Amino acid sequence: MPPLVPLTFTQPSTHHRSLALRTQCRQPAALAGRVMLLAMSLGWSLLMPSVVMAQHGEDAGPGAGRRPPRGQPGTQPQPGGRRPANVKIADEAPLPKIDRESLPPGYQAPRPIPPYLLDCKEWLLSKDENPTPKEKNSFNALKGAGAQLKGKDDVDLIRKIIRWKLSEFTLKSKREQVFKLREDIIVRDLRFANMTQEVKNAMLDAILVEAPTLFDHCLEPRFNAVLLLTDLNVREATSDGKQQAVPFLPACTPLLNVLNNPQQPDIVKIPAAIGAVRYASPVPTPVDLKHKVVEALFNLLKNPQSDPWLQMRCAEGLGQIGFYQNLNKQPVVLTLLLDVVKDAKRNWFVRAEAARAIGRLNLDPNVDLKPIAGELANFGLVMATEYQKSHKQSHWSGCFLNLYFAFWPMDADEKKKGWGLLTLVEKPAFAGHKQIVNAAYRQCIQVIKNVVTPPGDVTMPEAIKNLSDWIKQNSPNGVNIAPAAQQPPAANAAQVTGS
Image (cartoon, rainbow, N blue to C red; front, side):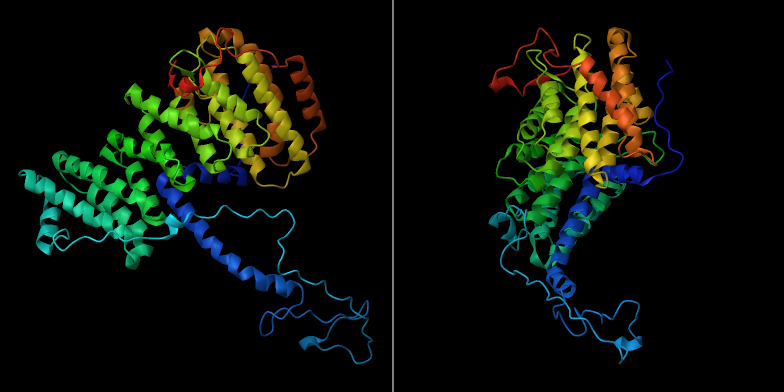
């Protein structure tokens, strides 16, 4: 039997550019740009009525919506739209009437935006709360090299300046500049200022106290306050890569408050989830903080009614943190991810991200990998069957790549972390599972290659038949993931621990 090899690509393809874009959009700053582009795109919907009118021959304005002249077969209209005088024009069929009141078939109205997200109240400071030019100069001096805090007055000054900067997020006159105001705090005040660690700690503490005040305001300041809290570091990374950034872990607490608050909209919870995972992922992060983040992500992913993009980020975060069982050693996270993969009512991207997350979990040798490999193979068969019906849809390449990464690490960094089931079974403790995992991968890779490496066979009958036959012979039905485990009580289901 030939050795297992990863997929190779001779040139960048649209599939990989799409994957790179999705990876970049997981970062909070890129996510802000994505949301802004989405908001801008909504404006084009205002132009659609005139476009539809033009397509149906309605008068949508001077020179618009007029059907071109139609002549006899074999004749062409003259320049300027004139028809030949000796050509008889056939009677045109009457245009269909446009129903301007009923909605198109299958249309689903988007969920309405809560009024409190649209009603933007301004955070107006009193005259004494607004900093004077002298105080602003003193604040800039504190950011200089070697500056030291002289006492409580300097700490109060830093907090006053931070409060003033954050209050500007809510001003209607600066509504279009909120993104820049947030970047100024991150870049000019924290990231590239040559300040002492003592001054920086005071600034981080001020942001930690004042930023949650914006959680009760409208969408723009609320969203940017969350983004601000996701990107705080005690120590910044160096350009040469020798020093990695050290996250400011206390900022994870207000992000958890956002995730656990049912009144916060999903669009705000998406960057909060990304930021919470960023703080919980490093190895030195306290275990109790990891527990709290996993619990929040677990509860959000359990809800199939939440936004698919939020579900996808939660599944991704559970995989990155790696915990798969609760404090009672019950594999509740692994069970949830498998349930999401099997849930036909979930979004394809969510199911594929859950499959990839399974390959990242820190599993114990007592976990039976046969049902896991079988479920992943069955998911590949389900996707391949649906792909035959709608192969032109753009989401398939990303979904099949996520299934591929459930088995094989994406790069050397992921391999070093032990991600991917094929990497896991190389460990001596998992040697007994190597044959079944390798066999599942050999079957899945045949359908994956047809989708992600052009030119592919849309029908791929042989690959689908082989995969289907293998699943019938290795059916995961009735096989427990961990035979000794039982379903956990509902109250403890989200309390998880690592392997």
